[in-house]
Length: 493
Image 1 (tube, rainbow, N blue to C red):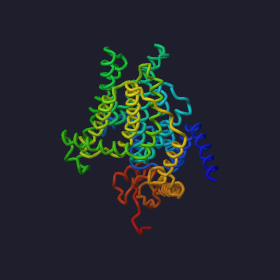
Image 2: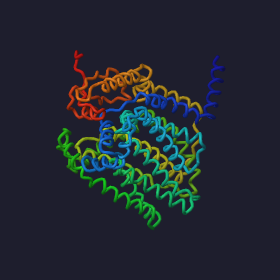
Image 3: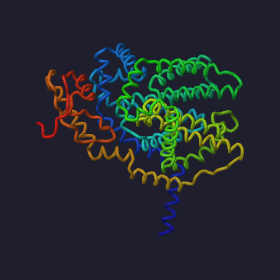
Image 4: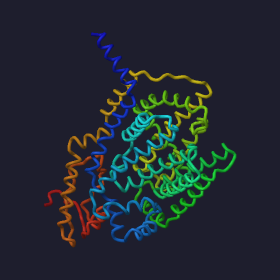
């Protein structure tokens, strides 16, 4: 019996050694699947109605002027939100937004993996790494709802992250793909400029990240090559110019006054030293939160032998991993901590979850980049050799992954919302509410039932209130063209 079991385990081990990429892809599909399905139960709330109503009321171009002058300089994200399917009352189109974002996130990450590793991997290996990165992000991101299912958040923060990943991918291709013609380089430069304008015009944290990234690359290129890069010079000029357009928007003053009145910690805003100290503490906390967990540890174990193999492949040519790891770590940590500073300086409190969603993507990518840089450095210095992990290690780590999925996390919550019917019931209740609102007279206060089923994946407690004058209620009523909308109070018919 023991011999039979041993023989069976050896067969499974050999099979996993041959099919480990497919093994990781299957695990990734299991993790990603519920987030696709639950998209079709999504409904708009609060700010979604606000952006759509403004575009409907003022028209697209006048709405852009209104937002820039009265609320914020985020000209790109505001423009995208002003083109929401809700503007033409296409509610099913709203459900397609998270599907589009998940697909774009996956394919831009896959492109980044391809460009980072200079086509070293085959298609299966690239897909397995991409599935792992997407899975890691979905498991541990602070707020799934803000990332994909609340369009005022997702089209501001998640879309800008996707554009940033695409920007980095095209920049890598521009500098490291020797097959691009002169005409092709002009096209790539144009695309890079367009992407940078869009990223900086999305929100302030993206602006800070894009400016720091471009500035550091600009300085690094001068030190490395002892000359200026025309491309990086153009991108730096564009970054500074567009950042001024964002920062000098008259609407920023209005928003700062609003924050001062509504944020309890606003009295601590504007203090450079205190904001810096808070940024350091918050940066350390969230850095440890993502990197010191089982799933990241497992991914790191998977990645280290791959990183050693990649170092062998790329050691004879200049590449973007040939950086002193100490320098890379200092730059990475500096950017990470500085990314928290704008929120603490302007509001006195940490960035909201939708901002942390954005930052977590680059923390995750930065973690694995630093591992590759470190291994590349010591591989060249010490000529480290490492064999491929045996198949039984992949089997054990895969089983541990499934055990992780049984613990409280975003994936388990998403499956629970689907399988227990919370998402379907939530959607049914909101469709019923829409019928109630549409049947009300335009000149009366419309009373609707409170939502009873709460799927945490797609509903972040942003419902309207029992008071028709509340800002959430006012946005909703204006969108539907009613005098007012409010929740029924208990025992009210």
